[in-house]
Length: 268
Image 1 (cartoon, rainbow, N blue to C red):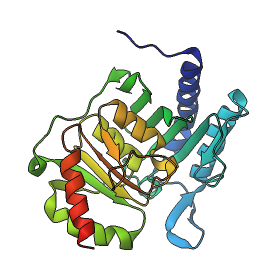
Image 2: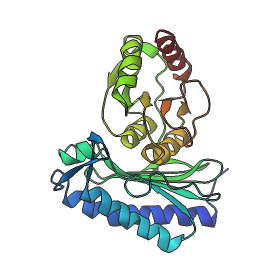
Image 3: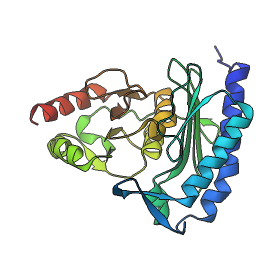
Image 4: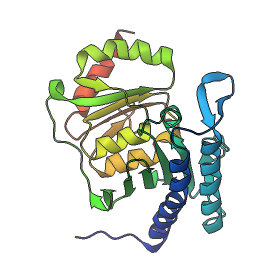
């Protein structure tokens, strides 16, 4: 049976892809040299550039032109915007801003669309590497138009993956107990890119705390459509309304990682 997109969903995807296409030249033009760096709020480690803002404004304008009644939650201008009863877009104009500033190409543009059920469309572009990922719920996950799937690693000790965090104290306490019990790990920086790496089998797992819905709305759809299992740390289905703690693995490793996290939490 070949699944096809209904007309509305196809239009949603087309708009997201077109928005990314228009944003990519801006991303590439200032990569590694974005000008002045600002601290957001009272956190001197939470950086933003004028490029983040320019890209978000461009994407918002594209969405509003086509779907004026949709909700939009964007990291830079509308992080606390209300979620729509129908459709809400989640935008991260540069996921991995610190990497972008320093010219390290593990950063991307992330656009996700959710309805009442959850993520519906996801598009993630890394303009520096030319990688373009997308997914539509029930249709599958794709990289440059070709289907992708998660890895087949089932041996916990041979697994290779990544960790991420937003709050250092909470993460350091958890991961200090978790790291000795899991396979090889790296910290790559961008939640969206790491979920794409999970989706295409480059990573076997990704565990993160302190994320926001705009960080992962597109990525969790791409990963889950590729076969990933995603939950919170209690084993509940992962939702955008409570995105702070996420366990994502390939098809085979989830139960083993869940046990390791529970043991680490018990020791806290």
